[in-house]
Image 1 (cartoon, rainbow, N blue to C red):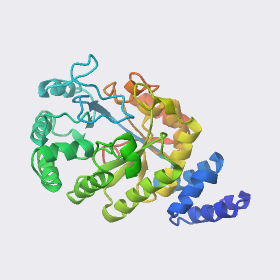
Image 2 (image 1 turned 60 degrees about the vertical axis):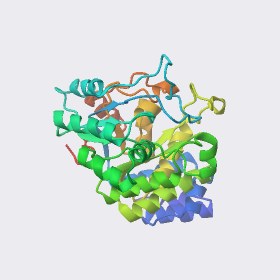
Image 3 (image 1 turned 30 degrees about the vertical axis):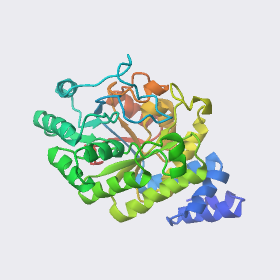
Image 4 (image 1 turned 180 degrees about the horizontal axis):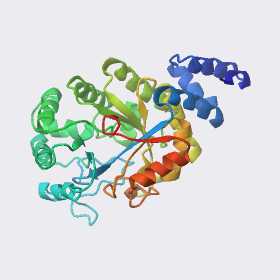
Length: 366
């Protein structure tokens, strides 16, 4: 193996690269230094080294679809393009029957997962959504239900008058299999006051995920990047996740979510470049040494950038989607009608020089 450190002139970066080559965990200050000083080619080499150590040359995908019950929401986050008030022509609220109809559209398709997230509806509690899960499981017992961000869970469980542990236990009994990573945004409370002041705190997000892991409900984790946060804020966010993962081991994947500017009150910020996207994937892969998978969510960043991300630490492209999500298309994402066949995903992965592997929701190979 080529000793890449011999080509690095900066002494501090050389020390970090030596640690990464030896599979030694880097510190938050070293992660920040990678963001601040490492050039993209070096980050590609170091993140590729880490990626191959954890996942070889494999790149994963699954067959999934989304249900977004409503975009009516009690919160009005500054970065959100999805929230619409009642009466707005772009607002919607699906009944249980309408959501079951979405499930039934896939009766003759080999999907393995339904992903359910939406706005925090003011009138719906845990029992309303629990009954939805029960109906889905009755119709298709084998379908993995990944549902409800921690922000939705906090509200629906509180509205039902239950503790977090009681609420998650009941949802598991209803049919909840895992939890997505949404709502984490950025953990800095100072920044949360600026961009999503009404929302559940970072500590509540972490508490909900830690409790779910303890109950045997795995989850994902996210970060919203590319707005008013600094590199130090990103490292702080990832350090909190890494610490929690050390305790529980319950996170399946980390998904960097790029701030998109259309139709929200932070549009003046613009958007970060593809170079910054790749830098963020690379540092995430290097720093989060205990989370097995880094997901490039292609409906958000586009197929080409998702393909590039595989060479900067990402190893998962999510799934087929089948045009069932509007969260990012409403914010100006490249993929206006997100849908890919398995052949298209496999070609995207193979063209990038990786081996495509179909998985289930828990990364078991199919």
